[in-house]
Image 1 (cartoon, rainbow, N blue to C red):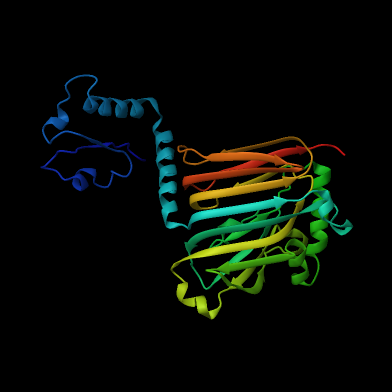
Image 2: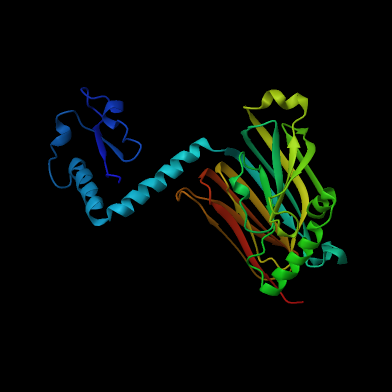
Length: 324
């Protein structure tokens, strides 16, 4: 059971140092007030900051069920633990989704997309993993996390189209040659660390492979010249061509870990009934810059945010194509 605690310290207190006053509770609810050691507990009236700090704490403790407060505290601890996970800085992402004329009959139902993503992060191992997901999965439970995953979302498609697209994917997954399966999803792909290209490595499948697989990863190994950079900050650059369902009505850029600043560009070709964009940022606060433009049959959205984005933050575009 968690007991709510608020720590109030005097900024002019010469008897008790700030670190001592905060103790182990300061990271939970700490409020410094400009006063000394003796005056800290002597408010002048009901509008005094010293009185209001105590009043608001008591109100919170009384009006919210203790079990709810306990869950809020646990949620805050989950956020606090994110500081130990991966952090990306100065992320720049761009994707362009083509119209229905960009693929041949062998890929009926899909269109091409070209994507690039760059960010700075601490290199954790002498290899990294990159791949594709096309269903609900435990991909993000891997340690270390993949550096990037191309998501082929099927959940928002009508049932008939969803099953047809999945049938095409399944027809590729049963092929014995893993390179052929990989080339279906990634005709072109390159990964660079500090401008040095990584080496294509082995494939990583889920336990249930074949038509039961919901993802596929490939391991990229560092060349010997980069081995001394493990444990240091590097710049990762991912560039690839892939496919997405033509009937897919949205694109979402989602933060799987902490991001410190992000620029996201989404371009979609086609004729649209509507084309809207929005963002969901956690934590709330700060302003996100957004611009949209329409040039011929292209719609483009640019997002820019300088603050911290917690896992689950997202920048999204949704559209409805006009019927032929």
